[in-house]
Length: 90
Image 1 (spheres, rainbow, N blue to C red):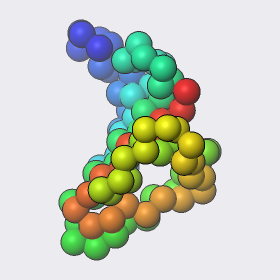
Image 2: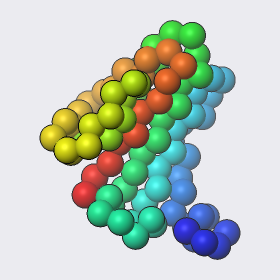
Image 3: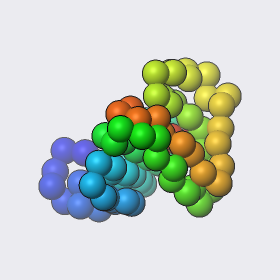
Image 4: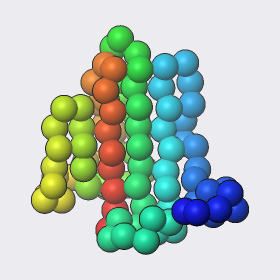
């Protein structure tokens, strides 16, 4: 995304609260193999659960990186304290 208009069209905040934020980049905005990317940041001192509307591939969860796209999650995800997750769909 190289313009403000592209950001406005493709960035959607999902949940924003004290110490937690999640957003998605949609419409294949980054022009790579990931159609939609969801980023979840947990700055709280305790794990945070977040409901998922569909199944996602896991790229990063806490300190673990999954490069093979073989790990998926659905229904809900628990983000460890002061860590993040990146989910995607191809």
